[in-house]
Image 1 (cartoon, rainbow, N blue to C red):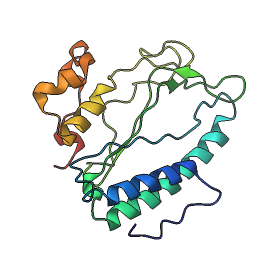
Image 2 (cartoon, one colour):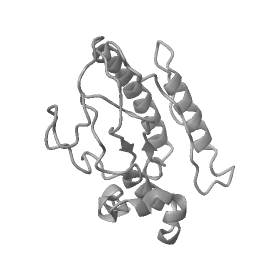
Image 3 (cartoon, one colour):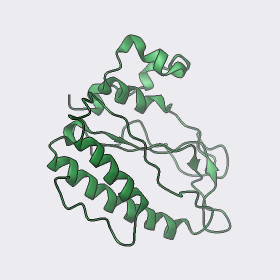
Image 4 (cartoon, helix red, strand yellow):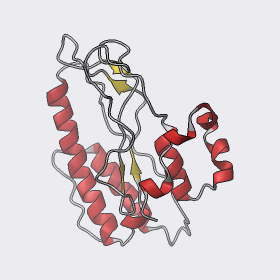
Length: 191
């Protein structure tokens, strides 16, 4: 590695996983890798109680891990060729439960981070209202998504080299959505 990459204390599983990814990225030429996809896992975010405290701790841990990782891939000179993409199997309710936590829901937010990402923006739309009974509210703050998961992943796949004629093979649900709801590659990435 090009940096000291000192893992935070206390030990952070996500920092360790991203450090291993940085090590693998550093071997890309020896491996003759044209592109890679790495999967890391971080959680839990299943915050059925004390969401404010638990979420703050998770965000602090993630922030420290991302800072180390980004510093390393910048030192390797490859940050413009790296995209970090978040995923979750479900969203969370906007209104709290009786334990000051949140319950399972549908809509959620995702992040795309990278040197080639046109960042600092929120893409797609916020709900017009977060009040109970708004047009997206399915009850108790469970929002019905306006945009498919593919709206974020299709431009990432295209950036990685999936050609447009193969997008429907890569994302079979694309045909179920209004294509105007998809983010374009040029909107998400610089190049």
